[in-house]
Image (cartoon, rainbow, N blue to C red):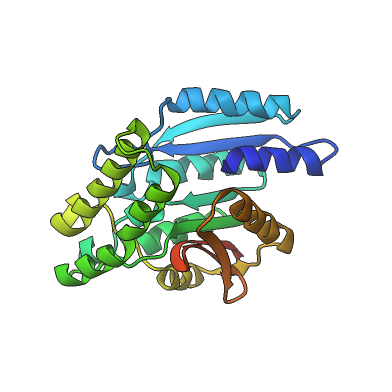
Length: 267
């Protein structure tokens, strides 16, 4: 719902809406498990472009094959060249993808952190704004017991939520959802090295990484926060939204942190 909501907002706030160019990274690594869609990226792009057209908003959609294993370097190179040719407002939405980039435990001693290197790469693009959305859980510990404890304290949430919103046991949607969560749990506790791609970090660590990469936090508008709270209250009982340290939003399930969202601009 992110992009349709953006399109609606652009259509309603500008007398002559600007051109939206949406570029997405299509994973090329089969070990990465993104949310599975029932349609291809091309079909998704066509639907979004048609929806934008229905709102009198011009939109371009392109897919760049890129992988987390090299820090999405192909995507970065594409954005760098495009931004040089077309000096437009660049908004980078890091939505549930940063935790797939290797962390310090997989880097060699002589190498910098792949995650820090990626953030410095996007900082060099001089983006207008960067949005970081990810799970607020620590799953990078080298100690199996620590990872198991974190997984136990976190992954009960999707199972509890599915009981509330997909109560029909045996439905295809529920089977897919539960299988995906089970795959993630297995990856966290049973895989090591490059095979362990589920390496989420808590909000505090990502905040520090962004600051170290020469970004500063930008506050979400009160209208935005109120709209999200209203949608959750109307359509998603059990889910909540809270603000932490003024500029950080956290999605909660029955009071437990699940996902955080932060916005950043170059410092």
